[in-house]
Image (cartoon, rainbow, N blue to C red):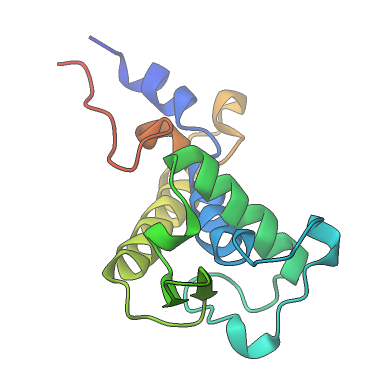
Length: 146
């Protein structure tokens, strides 16, 4: 059986990571983009409802790539494709139901970090909780030991 404090330690950084993954996936599949720094995202394509609107495009891309890695998914897992023949993605669209679930998970991890971990006063919990703590590279969270 895993002790709670051990599980919390393994979940450090999850909140930030989840937030990042949702946003970064939106731009990772843009056709013709070679380097991350060359990616230009129009403001209208940044449909941020949970993440801070103060985030730079680069911060959003980093966060989305982190989510993508921690959940082991592609951008289309949460984002809608504009055209299945060109793989063009509509990052601003809210049609994909997984995007709504991702937003809920971002809110959950933010609350865990803000409301609970911040009150522990223990340096072991100084890093934020993130998606990877539960998902561990899988779209569905891994079963915990019981």
